[in-house]
Length: 111
Length: 114
Image (cartoon, each protein chain N blue to C red):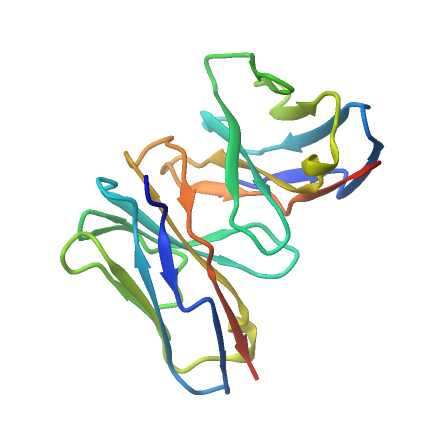
């Protein structure tokens, strides 16, 4: 099955700086890669997703880049704000369309 | 639109007891999922329904877990008997289509087994 890993497990950034989280996957057949944000005690919420026919996607301060050859994709958050503090989960679709989630990255934005 | 509704929010039971969770998906979403999220880990799919049929239950511990979605809308997930390692947040999610589609999660049920 699909193996999804996220690095680093915890990331601290100064408010206003950029944050980058990298996710690697193992199944070359994966074709859908979403990122979810989960604040403490709350539900995971989709913040951005990308499909394998696209290399980059941007939505305001958030962007995702995909490198299919290297089998990794990254979440980029620019001009970080305190409300960006959360756990971010990446996921990759398996061959049967099941989503395999990573263990999550804790992002802490320091005011 | 109303989100995915789940109940209860919290449940504490002793091992070997049984427990049931309820989920009402977003109106019009034919696909419903139950995920287990253990503390410090990402969500793990337990079962996926398309309308009232099971699409994927390969990771459901069928000796103790069961789920149903009889009328293709609401769903219940049951654990009987519970074990200590079942302590987790049980998340229900729904999506408009079953393939490569954004998941809309409910707030989850936090289960503690003592």
